[in-house]
Amino acid sequence: MLGTALIVWAETSAHAQQAGPSLVDTNLAVRAVTTNLTQPTSMAFIGANDILVLEKASGKVQRVVDGTITSTVLDLPVNSASEMT
Image 1 (cartoon, rainbow, N blue to C red):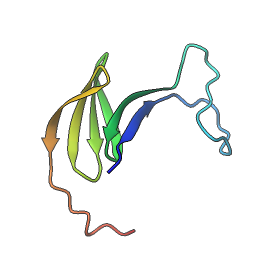
Image 2: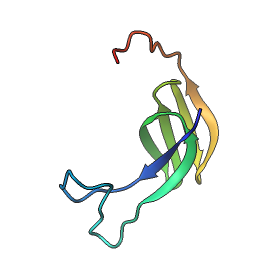
Image 3: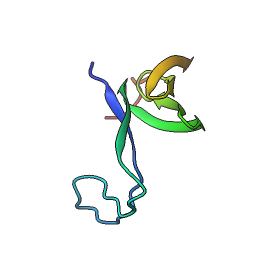
């Protein structure tokens, strides 16, 4: 299974037809923070370069430090069979 990159950005434009994020503040930038995540759905910043990321399908909370997945902080069972597609 291929991983997904975690990309952090701030979108300031309200145009729905754009192909990607558009920045108007030159102090901001879009960059990949890490790769090899499986369906990341949310994140919490716990330090300057320390992020907790929730993976939807696996139920894992991954710790990303300086762009590297360092550990699995929490691994919960996920019942995907009951989700509607």
